[in-house]
Image 1 (tube, one colour):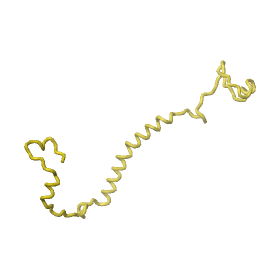
Image 2 (tube, one colour):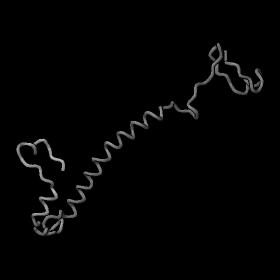
Image 3 (cartoon, helix red, strand yellow):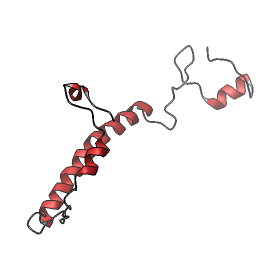
Length: 111
């Protein structure tokens, strides 16, 4: 049998099974977990449920909100949120005009 450090202070080491075998345990009386006067009324239980839901929701929402803020960066309108291509003069480069001048499938950068 395992005996802690306080068990070596001059006490004889006896296995626990030998001690329990020599004594008869008194029968255990089982009682109901909640007696009528120990159970809170329904209004108090509802309030406690609301507090529990709030105590769980706030930290959970903060963690999930942080992950969503990290994983989904903000975008500035538009369908794709991309940057419009400009030429050297600062004019917008249109897709149709680019294909006419460069040809379909061209992989040149806008200069």
